[in-house]
Image (cartoon, rainbow, N blue to C red; front, top):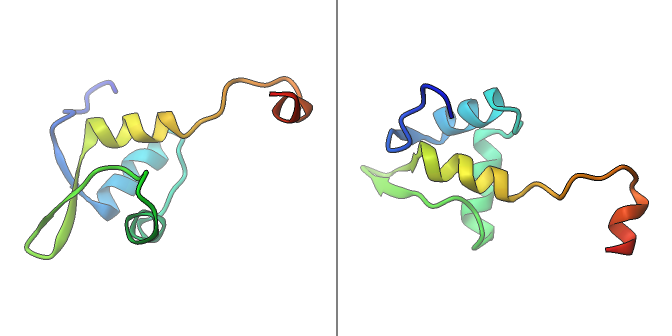
Amino acid sequence: MNNIDPNQLLDRTEMAALLTRLGFKITRQTLAKIAATRTDGPEYQIFCGRALYRAGPGVEWAQSQRSRPRRSSLEALVA
């Protein structure tokens, strides 16, 4: 996370843009859906009715969603 303050607060649009810039293509709408329907999404806080994410934990969450490296799609079936 070069040049990213891990404590910087980002709204959903900014968080989606950061993650997309880092290679984790995601939209603001997807972050909102994850917040509404899942319990394993990135942590956020509400301020004046808006969701705010800390940059560091948001990036860590995205990294945790990746699979292990694979050479074949068959590897997922064997694991």
